[in-house]
Each structure stands twice: as C-alpha cells, then as structure tokens.
Length: 455
Image 1 (cartoon, rainbow, N blue to C red):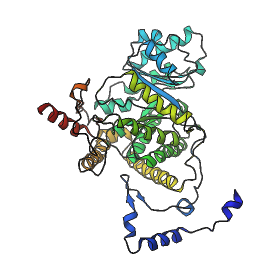
Image 2 (cartoon, rainbow, N blue to C red):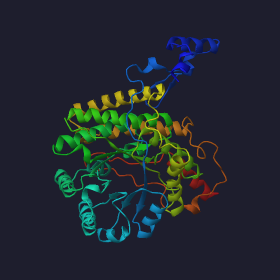
Image 3 (cartoon, rainbow, N blue to C red):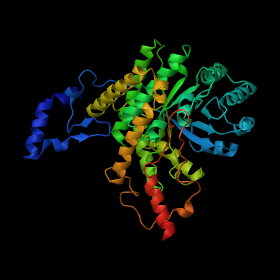
C-alpha cells in the first residue's frame, strides 16, 4: 500500500486551491465556502496541511454500541419483546417502584444495560438494588445508568430545590456499590432539543460537568455518562461526538480526576422530528444514528418516528431498533474503530468545535459556573437566540425538512391520527427562565392542522 501511494505526487493546499480557481473559470471562489450554523467556514478542499499535528488521531477505541430501547410505564411483556427484538439496553421510565421486580421478571439484568428514569430516583435505586440482592447478583457487574441530572431538571423547571446537593449525594451514596453503573447522566440532548447549536450543546454540557465536580469533590468520573442529541447535520454531528471526548479529557485534567473513558449516549433529535409525512423521520433518524455510531457513541437510542403525534407503539419501537441492527449487521458500522480519524474534513470540524466549545465553557466559568449562568439566564438566552434563527431559516426554507416545508403533501390529513398534543405547555420558571424543548416544525404543523379542520 505504501508503494501505491508513492506513485502519486503530493499536492499542497495552495496547489489544490489554485486548481479549483482555474476550473471555476472566473466564477467566485468564495461561493464554494459554506458558513455553517456553528459559524465554522467549510472550505471546498482539505488536506494534511489543514490538520497539522492531529492527523489520524483517534478519539475512541471501540466500534460497537448498545441498542437502547426507551419504554414508558412498560409491562414485562414489552420489556422481553424489546430484548428479543434486538435491544441490548433498556431505559425504563415512570415505573412504580413496587412494580419494578415484576417488570424485570426473567430479564437477565447482569447481561444487559438497565437504565432508570424516575421522579423519585432514590426509591428507584432502592428497588433496583433489592432485585439485585434477591437474585444474588454481583453488584459490580450490573451496567446501565440513572437518567438523573438534577441540574438539568432544575433548568427545565426554572427553579432549584432547597436540598439540591444533599439529595444528589444521597442518590450517589445509595448506588455506590454498583461500581460499573452510572449514577449521573448529563442530559445534553435537552439543549439540542431546545434549539442549541452543537457548540452550545458541548459547552453547556461541559459546564455542567464542571459544576458537579466543583460541588462534589468525591464524585468519580467513572460514575458519569454524557448524553447528547443528534441533528441531521451529518458530518458535524460525527465531529461533535468526537469533540466531547477531547473536552471530557480536558475537564478531567483540570480537576485532577482519574483517567476515565467517557460513557457517551446518543439520542436522536426531537428537534427535527415532524408531524406530517412522519415516515420520513425514519430516514432522518437513520442519518442521526449513523453520525452517533461513527462518532463513537456507546449507546444509541433511536426515537419513535411517530412520536410527534402518537403514544408509544410496538411498530415504531421495532423500526427504531432495526435502524441500529441494519447499520450493525448489514452495513458493518460496528467493525471499524473511529473511522473518521484521518478524515481531514471531519478532523478539522472536530478541532474547531472543541475549541469553540472550550471558549464558551470558559465564558461560563468566568461568570462563576453553570448555576450562576443559569440564574442570570445567560444559557437560556443564548439558546433562545439560536432557536429563533433556526425557526426563521425553517420558515424561509433555508433549512429544509422533507415532507414538511420541502415537497409537502398538501392532501395529507393528520388530525384523526393525533393521540397527544402537538404543542407542549411552555414553562416560564419561577427563579429563572425554564428551558423548553420544541420541534422545529411545530408552528407549521399547528397551522396545517387548523387549515385541515377548517377545510
């Protein structure tokens, strides 16, 4: 292979650009430069000169990912059906603690990842530990995570609880024996789903990690998971997932924490999910799953394609799992570790996203940290400003969602399909502005539904 490459003469970046200018025959070279939503200029050509000092560096050494299935108030039948259908990780939400044992009956929790999301997370930990002890399982082998992020919960609510840090320490102490289990999951996808840029999602998530370390000196890096959303900006999303690992290592060094490989979870974005022509959402989530897998996510949760209007159903859940299964078993995405390493374009985006996110993180630290930045509405206002730009671009057709503002089917009727409200209640917040998630196409969806009713 080395001999083959030597047969080709090396071209400098200037020579490549000169060739492009020649081929343009007088047309503007600047027209080939794309200014991304991240304010990163994308050039028409990259080579080794573009990424001096980082060429070929890997950000992760694994290739496979867990297929996570979200289940809200599930039955044992649904849990077993998901596992038999290809899921290797469960995210169980809103289960009565007294029902947890029944829901996990005949489930070999020592061989899968079992994650829990609950409004009473402390009692949920107790119930989970009770099951482990009854089955005489090794607590050190149990894997999964608590989808527990009290900072984000406060931001979503618009106020902090009085015993905020005491509650956090209590939950972590309860799960201390579960050494392989993550007791804190940074919910970065909430920033994404509210309209944040990739830079903001990275920077704000980083600031959260810093806040937890600052207020909990005994918090171990091995107990933390970071969860990020995924958009349809394919290459930038790959770069984002690679960048968070670089930033994670920087924070660990800053706090003199032990080296720990980041447990990185991906959740396909609610932001780009549409009500009309909903099957196109499967194409979007396939692209998003690909980005997360290539970017090095340890677990990927593909949302239901019809989540904008329908309660959870078996078909949508099966389609979500199948996306990961096809990428694994038919496309072999899980066979190469960090395939983007050596890609000049993706490496350059990774570098710029990392640098921009670090600058934003330092800006928050200069204000006294994440909590102060939230109380002053700095974080909320930054996201709101970008969300407004996203919505304007969508309305003007600069951002396109197939089947909604691009080639919409005007004959499509959706009112009869609605099982849930298209618009979510907007929370104002008592102490500071609350962070509200919103689909990009919500306003257009509402207007089309009204037209349909009046027709």
